[in-house]
Length: 281
Image (cartoon, rainbow, N blue to C red; front, side):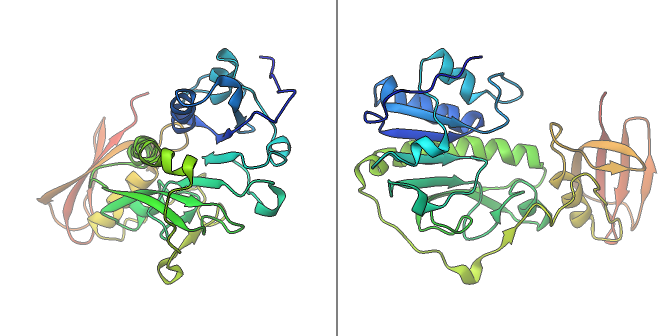
């Protein structure tokens, strides 16, 4: 596909930078409010214009004649509304002519800044998660909060399930607040950093997932489902990949580990049953 860069930036009013369904749905939403040449996108660097398990923002932009910009070009546009929606680059606010810079982060800030936000809440046994619309500053997910949506994190939900919740809830959050972003009619709340936690890519090695079976059944279940995201990685037991983990209230005795053709039956030190289903190749 041939990327079309705009020749004139004076008319651009909104930029969507990012990937996947949330960025694409945001673009469709804003197309109902602006002319196609008043909006531009910055696709992530790995977006080659082909739909995969997620839709390509670049592909849709090219099909609908939405201008495609570089980050350096957008940084020069005064007063542009910049929306970061799973964007793959760290930003420096002083490099922008505009101060209208916003991000939707997939967690209930100030908890779980940084990456692996589909993994870390599950590993820690959280019963809720959320999505947060916030101003961009020079920190990582540290800007003032504009709005949040908090939702339940189901006991049997995997990292992949949580990610799809983030996509849906994040778009709803944007839809509810887009008019206030456009007009500037929103309130800002500073984050309470005493409740903050941050995770970098070096803190979890998704290529070498080690399931510690000397834990409670709840903790073992959390380890399994936290890494169940078929497009990226799956956990393993005895070298066999696990596609689903189900925690039961049934007591079967401590430290059970049994294998059948399609699943493992196991328990932790407290004896509650876990069904770990093998991947169906």
